[in-house]
Amino acid sequence: MLSIKNLDAFYGKLHVLWDVSLELGNECVGIFGPNGAGKTTLINCIVGLVKPQGGTVEFDNKTLLNQETFQIIRSGIAVVPQERELFPLMTAAENLEAGSAYIPAAHAKRKERLEFIFSIFPVLKLKSSLPAAVLSGGEQRMLTIARALMAYPKLLILDEPSTGLQPSLTTDLFLRLKQIRQSEGISILIAEQNVRQCLKAIDRGYVIENGKIVLQATAANLADNDYIRKSYLGL
Ligand SMILES: Nc1ncnc2c1ncn2[C@@H]1O[C@H](COP(=O)(O)OP(=O)(O)O)[C@@H](O)[C@H]1O
Ligand SMILES: [Mg+2]
Image (tube, rainbow, N blue to C red):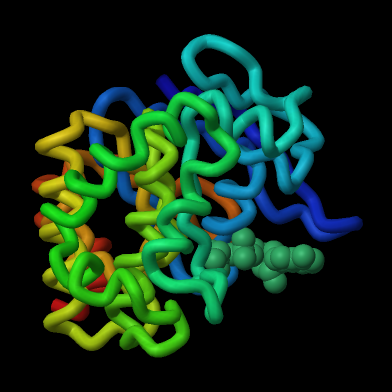
């Protein structure tokens, strides 16, 4: 589904991604790495916000590199950015509506989509008539994910979804992502620093450090890996 090969990306003279390759099929994949490792840059290369200097990015066997961001989104990729980027004065329901607004097929099916979304995030139904700004941090995070799901993506990409959430909400968030994956069968890519919690949701993971992929393995093998245990799990 998503195939990234030998990607090199720069900001000016700063070489940020070095020969990065990543494959994602119908599965949930994690990208782990410390702050500044290049996770967000990699996501931005997928959605056309950063133009790589070398390498390929393909989605369903079509290159994404010559496409504009709006075309890439229309082809079935939804991104939940690290900053919440909600419309604060619009209600939760209006924010959800906005998630389907640019995709006619999704807009036509938005009522049934809301039912599905409320089954995953019941609190959003309770608070649907409130302005997004008055929702708690955890609820706002759920709302950004729900808004992305309104577009019926084939691939959902989340950039550090656990940022700023307390541990119990983080556990809950990854459980719900797993639930979404199981009920929809969509592919999910999660960039995270919280490796311990994210491992519960993913099938496979990549570790990126200083812009280079240093390791890739199944979730079970990552959990057992000595380097991961020392550097990322504090064991
Ligand atoms: N817009 C930008 N301009 C210049 N340098 C950037 C920009 N965005 C990120 N960087 C640098 O690129 C590197 C990778 O950043 P980023 O992709 O944001 O990492 P991560 O998401 O893993 O924290 C870091 O050294 C960061 O300082
Ligand atoms: Mg980032």
